[in-house]
Amino acid sequence: MSNLFASLLSASGALRAFDRSLATVQNNVTNASTPGYAKQRQVLNALEFQPERGLPGGVSAGERVSARDEYTERLVRDQQNEYGQAQQLKVSLSDMEPILDVTGQAGVPYALSQLFQSFSLLSVSPNDAVARQNVIDQAGQVARAFRTTAAGLEDASANAGRQIVSAVEGINRLAGLISDYNALIQRDVHNASDPSLDANIHATLEELSEAAGVQVLKQENGTYNLLLGGQTALVIGDRQFKIAADTGSSAQSRILDASGADVTAQVKTGRLGALLELKNDMIPNWLASLDTLASAVATKVNAQLQSGLDSQGNPGAALFTFQAATPARSLDVTAIDISQLAAAAAGAPGGNGNALVLAGMGSSAQVGPFTFTGAYADLAAKFGRELSNAQQRQATAQQLLAQARAMRQDESGVSLDEEAAQLIEFQRSYQAAARLITVLDELTQSVLNLIH
Amino acid sequence: MSRFVSRMELARRARSGVKEVRALLLRPTPQAVRDCAAHLEEAIATVRNLEGELGQPGVESPQALRSEVAELRQELDQARALLDQAFRAHAGWYHLLSGMLGGYSREGTPAPAQPACRWAIEG
Image: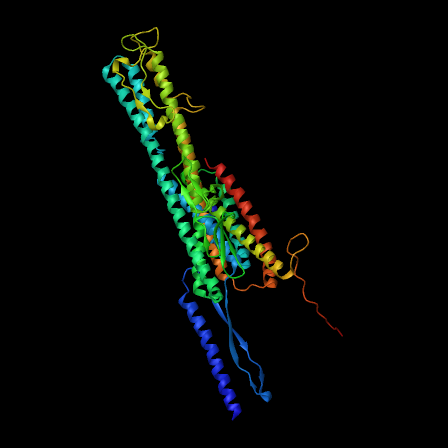
């Protein structure tokens, strides 16, 4: 009789264990596409089986084990961080593409070529009022084109500033979630093994990595500490240290830690890193190049006009005016009268000598080795290269992120022996493939050089 | 064969081969990496073929051909990045597991895991 009871007990225990296994599998299936969820496995323990001593055997449900691997999680987070940076740069630079026109059919290069063409027409009819008015009108177009381009770059800078503020708010919100999750774990240690909380934590960490480079340190009690750029505390246990964006007090945007110290240098990666690079380095550099060009155009054209004679035989007047601190943004035409335009060279009143020199300025080196339009093309080409690099970098980062996610998904309790064997095999195949890629790289470069 | 295949088609074929490599490397098992070699060798042969054809006059625009080869190089860059990351990941894993099982050497590097002693009696 006792054997019958023992068997029934064993069978009911086994049913409970299998029921938990089934529930675990069901939970895995239900959460198959839940962000951050890691597969769980129910450990089953065999019970002692010694019928002669009344131990009926059977099975009991042990602990639930997560398939999460912190190494692959970190791999994914690192790639998410790189992807966030590349994606932000690609989007921001693509949005700015229309500002720096490279076709020559609009904007600064078109206006410049029209201005020097108007000087050429003036040289044909130096005393013609229409030709003189045309020069002043085209100068107005040049000034407007510079101001529009500078305003476009300034708008892009202001937009990047707003995005920096929003990215910082996002980082604080996500860090706040992690500190809340940490508080739950600190309150009850069993929460650390709750797959739902674990999924939320890892989905949040992944999102955070896209926004900025954050070092994640898992503590022994199951909580996570976060350091921005590996140095500035964002979350320690259940305490959050909020960062702030300072985009107004100086030309350079800054990131401040909870104590107000400048930690901008620690934010090099992620979306925030890209926005800071754009706002603090790239846009100011392009604006500076545009200012140099605007200043060169205005100064050189003015100097040439002032060295000639107007229609009354007096020294010519300046055509352009600008403020020294912001040449492109402030470039404008003076209140010059058509009679004050110096088409004649000094010593030859009524002639076209000066107009000829002015027309020639459009095709001679004026800004270093470049013509005026060449200098603009150089600026636009630099921008184009940045955009093209950003597009390529984003495409590669997307692939690397997909690969890291696939590796995370495939990973489950790899043993050292298994990994050692794989590594040796991998190393051989890797070396062969890497060599072939190098050969193909050299070959395609040589083919590119041969195509005329 | 190349006499019947345009230079543009050769460039496209090479690019599609490298695309296959890139797709394989998205799930970089040792088998997948081994399989890359065949695709890469084929792409090399195709590009060599294309290189040989460049001496002859072609019908396609040089710009279009340049752009196709440039895109092939971009695919190649991505494949290289994927291959490097996969290798680094496996090496890092091994390093980590060695450290976990064998502890650390005096220099602070992971020590190789010592296999357990085993007796064997042979007769």
